[in-house]
Image (cartoon, rainbow, N blue to C red; front, side, top):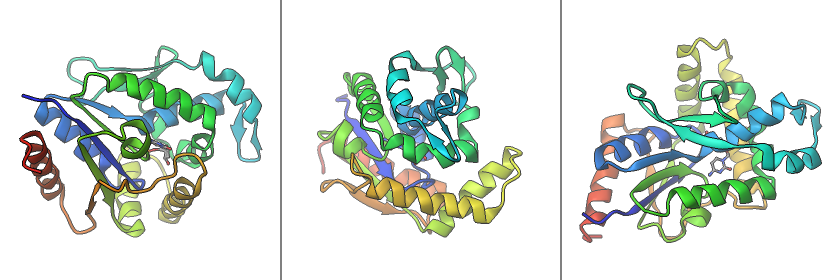
Length: 231
Ligand code: DC
């Protein structure tokens, strides 16, 4: 069967990665979480004194880029591929609120995006890929056969994220999670390089009122229709 490229973009915590992963599993495609790559670069910057609350050494970040090696790797029994930063599994470490607070400034840097976009494009060369992020349908794969743009209210998204963080044992306040979502929305949509925008040919899905099953079946139907050439 023809393999296509599926780009899923949208605001933070809209459930893009959940649906992208379900879709990839169903279709036998590769799932790539592009946000994990920006998060891993952010973790590197935090660990190497490049970014903190009152300091952002952009020159050092740019100089360090060649020494940042990112890889996805999946072991039998894992639900999804984990991201490795210079050989270390950082999948869990990149999901903290602290990383979420620094990731948007890191993602504004042109050289960071250049490096990550090139790696993402290589991963999609053979099609059969579902990638989620902010600029997948606009910059990484402008020719993707199916582009989805996910949205939900900020409050709903914060509630989902808050629950996720509590479930993993992180002691966070709901207000801080909501503020982080709103701050990232602002930074992701207003940055100069590759801002979050809906591609002209993307199909928008607002999942504020949808459960995971409805959401999956909506997207799956679109993918099946596209693969069969019905849309
Ligand atoms: O999908 P996520 O929330 O894990 O992404 C974390 C951040 O990375 C997000 O706030 C913006 C940035 N990002 C980006 O700029 N471009 C992408 N393709 C994916 C993520």
